[in-house]
Length: 466
Ligand SMILES: [Zn+2]
Image (tube, rainbow, N blue to C red; front, top):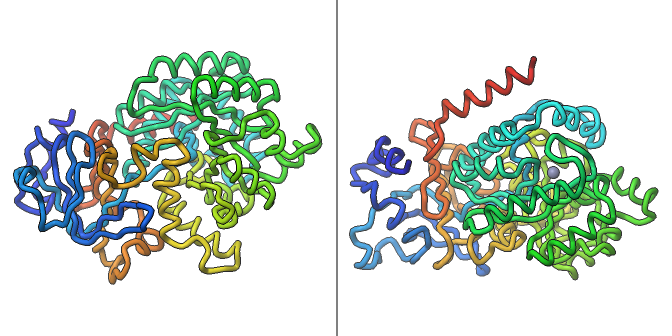
């Protein structure tokens, strides 16, 4: 497929005029020459006029543009002279197949939204093909916005994996578990068995990792949580769950269990360094300290929290307490854009107003939450999340010379407060160019046709309207 992608596209114009591009070399050895490289390292380095040398899917060197080593003299060159190149973005909380429920039920609070709209729709429509098609559309949306890895949670995970493999992305698959029967499974033990089967099938795939995903404290029993905690430890898998999303969830837990959900999950052994907690909207100071001590991670989903009126997560306080926080979109049914740029900007703005302090969550920290901090939450920090020699070449080029981006005194400021996903011109995963936007704004994917994706979405629209 890559031959088709590179051979059929007018590369010289796109890559800066007149460069000869060897399709056989492009995914093995090439040089990205960038106006800025933002590695997202601990020193907050900003490199100007640098080049990234990609070799066999890995980042082999980062050098000034004028100091390309001789051994790379004949490598293909990608001209990003008006771009900032950043690590691939990581979406730390997604339900990718819910892309087919985008705009299906708006303007409800979480519980009526779930009980009266989303769960009945899922009962009616969710199947293997629903999950595959919804995930494929989500992958396209994410790739076009510079997302290279996402942390998913949904039914029929194998169908999501098939979509992800076609898109060429990375995923951490959350093997969903609830006590409730769905079209996917009947009992908690069915969910666990089906999930571990999928994990066994794909466990050696370099682009796929797994976590158990007990849905939420209000849908999973003590016994199941305890069993999952044991199993996760035995199999060395993470745990991905929703936690403290709404006040109603906390109230229900107090009534049913006499404790807040975090306290309950802590006692059940669910909270630890391999745990990613989606939302964490309602967390008190002592609870942030607990999460910090346990080394658990929060997936902050500001837009979903705003849309469902769940509240404003205390993100700056969490970071100050030493809790690692990444950013997620949540599903398209509650967002409705699977757009990490929107989450980055909203997170930065929301933290300031929540703290009544304009210095809260500065731009660089917001960008960290969509890259290296999210990688750390998934245990993938040695592999992705920063532009570092030896790491996988998951890279994104963002064009910063359009009229709305000028003047540009600080590319990091622009990435957070100005840029939109339409400015992403290339997304590479493991050194493979998976997405590019042409100068006239057309989307192109390595292994997916835009027209096919449109037709899949429209077919589901017709079906679900009937
Ligand atoms: Zn969610």
